[in-house]
Length: 388
Image (cartoon, rainbow, N blue to C red; front, side, top):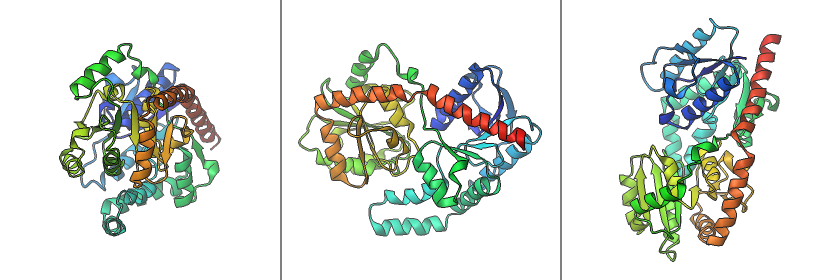
């Protein structure tokens, strides 16, 4: 097939979506598909040889205008290549396939309010959102994406499929569920025990200290506040440590940990390019997110054999069978429930059972399976295009 991937920037070091697009491009190229990238910037070294690039102008102006400019540029450029099956991954329109890796903006905006525990704060945040030009801009753009052009839609969880039906009444026959997957070879370092010992020592962990890992860029949305409260509840487990990685903005959170009396039990690691070392150093992952269409960090943890504690607002929870690989909490604000789940994983025997199950689950949901399912969607879109 001749395929066009449409995304403003494909520089894998910048985030999960861009890493995913690069992984997908390499696999498609290895299978002999002709690939085109419509983007403003990219890292050619991370993309397959032979990929054809179509540079689009970098959009300027206010944040809420830039997606419209990129989408319009992309649409104009694609009209010159009518033979390509086009795939959009974010705020674009007119592609044959739309694969919103970040889920729906409408659902994300609503779930973002849940990160505030107090109803008053939630109400203030709702009013602020109503006055946010970016929110209205993205909502209008999203309606154009799915209600005007009616593409074939790929979503990465049943949760997100439900959001399409709830917010836009998109019929189920236009939505295909293809859960996310990762390349487990990225975590196959043969010297993992040495790296584990080295980084645990660097971060002040003794060999037998049980350690949980939290990885995110948006600490509040992904549930760090309730997680810190849960750690405070584990006061009888003096050797327990929490590793926090992802965002360089840690000062306010460090103060919060001090107020809770747990500063000595939390290690703020900041932005990490070598995040796989964090997985190696930890014993389980805690990801009590308020919204995640299908969190890649959960899949990465499973691939590393880490049990997982996450929330029902994470599409990746659909891949778990609690309590086999870990636990799913209904409400991230429930500090007590979150602490109880974590406490069960402080038992070495229980943790080992969950670790074995985590590896088994990761081996069943592979990138190869994900790729084959996605390829069938692309073939379906190509058939639709020929028929039209």
